[in-house]
Length: 428
Ligand code: HAM
Image (tube, rainbow, N blue to C red; front, top):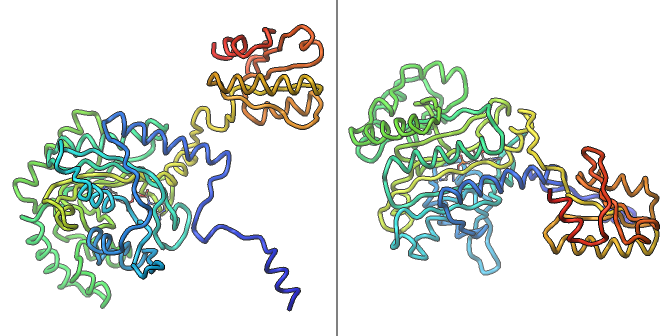
């Protein structure tokens, strides 16, 4: 009994199922992708919004849609100690809307352009590229229904992927119409679906959310859907003109896309322009990002009736896609630029001061700790991915100088034992 207890106590613990860790050097790629996406959003005028990681459960029921898998099956919902029902955020758009309304951002200059990043939580069946804690960088432009904004946002997402070095992805695009044409289309699609020999569950889905049936992956269902009516053929004049301006602007901006009239997104709030970025190197979980317009959402969660459009880019899947393409972002794996190698006690404490002064001057630097020989200490420089090693032994110390070795081209210079002198060399 006590033996069992002891072994249980000392059992190594692992991360919760389906939750990835990012440890070095992978964490370098992760940060690189996330920060580059966020930087691109800032370049386009999107300001950061830091959102709570959990919200009132009602927000997602109202904002994302109760018939979606995300809300009905995948939420991490629990009662807190004050007996409130709270939910770990499964996505960011509903939270952004809530914050915009709560802080009256929609009463100022429009569009409100916001971006965010961080973890989201979905109780999905874990598999390669599908996690229960997933990371996104998102952007939302709220308040103006101008098709030029749709194109800007889509071009921004496209630029994000290209900026980190991805090339083998495609942008799929469609329009889901608006209130003036979607109800009629929905009826047409239901008429079509109800004539098919569908199983009970699928028929039920056709009643609640017929568009979802188009996304059924089973070949026997897909075989029956060849002649299904498509939203894109039933758009109102206004929605059609809106979509045409979006595609024409994307053409102008040189962003390539394919029209996918059967695209079905996992969230219910979408209207008009809807898109997904797909990467073929990832197997089943090929969606590296997606988004669209959500013109009814703000009113639905208690705000003004303002339009909006946004995207969520999957950071985890982008990291996997970079690996699939064999792209290693430059600088990733480099811990510091400069690495100090000092032999002897006095040299080591002198080196500690030099390294500290270099950091204060903005040069990333580290040094070998512990008593090591020259060879062992130089290994540290290599492991750190440093471009320069600073070598300090008795001879250099006596001359008040330090050797600066360029580890890339194997050249070496000796300079004064002083941070400014070293910084001049390593900054060249
Ligand atoms: P979403 O399509 O549900 O959209 O998620 C966006 C991206 O997050 C996906 O394309 C995928 O790359 C990544 N992602 C989603 N679930 C997982 C998962 N389980 N594991 C790994 N990656 C995942 C949204 O969340 C919307 N809020 C996007 C949006 C913003 N629409 C308008 N504004």
